[in-house]
Length: 505
Ligand code: UGA
Image (cartoon, rainbow, N blue to C red; front, top):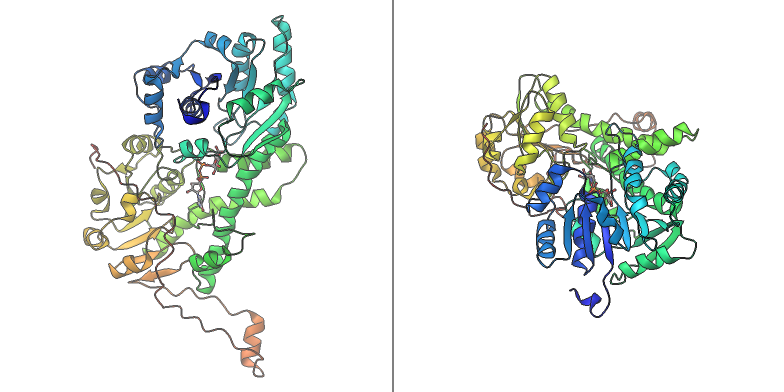
């Protein structure tokens, strides 16, 4: 048992829905010494878990699951009857419709199954991200179900998660804050149970209304998405005026009000959370007559970045990608996951193929690569990064896996028909690539190397007037468009290495 639970009774927990959120919650709560039963309706998923196979890749999770199953603190079942034994029942089912919209069918049918089975003294805790408009209905739906079953009322709370794929275990075990949203908890026993569950956490526990809890989750994701789109817009200014976004953001980050996190420019955000939560917020607010132009622009800038990848490749290939063989390095929406949900790779590969390019993709996650091949008609997948690069006219870095950061660029250039790299994650060293003979483009760091293109902006009319008329009261700052830049900041290095693949080109 972990240190903080010494001498303290553990809490009996059920987690309904063993996707990313539910499985991480189950394993981490078991790791903290609680008795956890994970419940899942998908026969294939429960069979895999009972068999000791993980349904997705998340660093450190398989080890936690195995260790806690071994000591009997974590069990899995398809039988919802297990809920009857729990003090705290988490609901962690999906709320996306897969098309950029919310859906509450899954959670409503889940509530149907579990609410009549809750013990009288249990607390119901929703961990799924809920549409704000559903919050007012939630305690009413649960209350009605309990009443129809002839049972007493139970506390209903929200406990949003703030974990990131790739670091979800650490994020759960060492949270920066724990948010408890109260939907219905007349005597406070629901909140007391959750405080007991989380008593080992050193993070502040913030109690608020369910609406505030849901909006604090949504607000965090909207802000992160806004920061990324901001960085991408700023990167365009840097390209326009011959700047380097790494230097610019690096200098801005010294201001503690700004900070440096989530300001990495590139092809924008993907995944199951940020893109979807931005578009759903805009759509749902519009339905209630509320315009949200800032969030709409965040989504628009994000999609534009995916198209800019195509434009940059075309630019370096002499105007068009048609007929070119392009090595797509990485397909997952970020490193350390096998998740392809709303991955920019899908849009980029599809558009390149539409434009007449041959796309050869490689990713260290074999299962993601196979899934990618099914999602993108016409794409070819490679058995190794070398095979992807062989005879390529250009390479496009889409996911900044460690295996790509550590490539021997001289060797890579010698394999390719033309040494062209568009770095969609600003993850590679400009100096290294240029020294290896590449024409190298990233986002907000210009185009460098072999076929160096000086990005020049037309002079503003006022400046032109000054230059042609009376001597100006100031001088134009000297900008050396051809200078090679110092090494870009490397703070996003993950150092992940790939693993062998069994696929063939
Ligand atoms: C995101 C949030 O970061 C979590 O706090 C939140 O709990 C989670 O959504 C959720 O709602 O469940 P996640 O989707 O796992 O987590 O991934 P992020 O690390 O946020 O990355 C999202 C995307 O933004 C990735 O495609 C990443 O490459 C991109 N990104 C990130 C940038 O383009 N620039 C950056 O500076 C940072």
